[in-house]
Structures are given as structure tokens and as C-alpha cells.
Length: 72
Image (cartoon, rainbow, N blue to C red; front, side):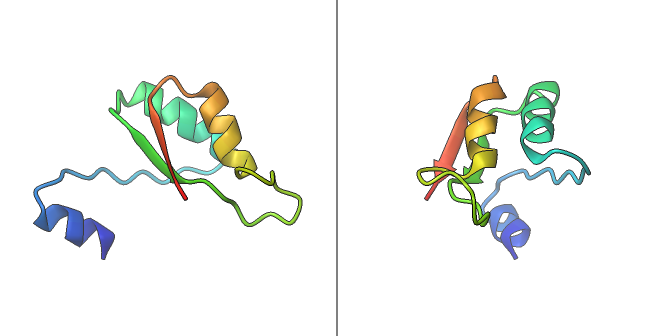
């Protein structure tokens, strides 16, 4: 539904599926793909996750050269 919604509003969307460490793959894919922006949620679902931000979001912020927008 999200892809259809964005397409209906004239936004180009590229979907990529990969297997591995989420934070590393997000940062590497964003840089290699020359994307303008990474948009992701700020809280994970890990019981031992970071209290302020999810651990994946924290690692992406630390390693990604592409701007990151965190949605709460």
C-alpha cells in the first residue's frame, strides 16, 4: 500500500531486499546507491534495545554518509 500511495503522488520508489546486519547494510546500500535520504523508525522492538533510539537506528546514524530522517 505504501508503494502505491507514493507512486500516486509522483514519488519514485526503489525497493531493495538484502540479508545480513541491518545497520551495516542500510548504511552501505544508501552510500553505494547514491540515495538522497534514508527514512527509518527510531525505535526497535528489542527487549534490550537502546532506551532513546533503537540500536539499528543508532548504528545507521553512526555509519551512514547519507542524511538520515528518524521517524518516531
